[in-house]
Image (cartoon, rainbow, N blue to C red):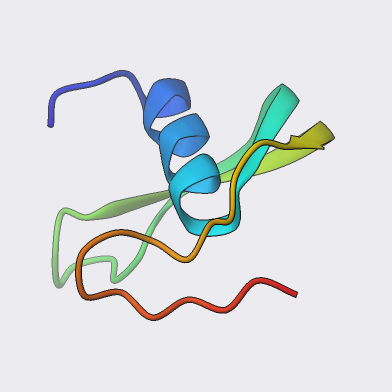
Length: 66
């Protein structure tokens, strides 16, 4: 989408779990398949969470939040 990584992580967390992070820390950026694809995975730690929705994803996603 061209949005900043942290904004994407915050949006995905809210859409999929219903939680908003008060603090988000980038822990790791790493290639998923070095030499095979240029794809990079970014791993964030979300803390100071507060529930703001039901989660479950969007569209045809079937995500169950416990």
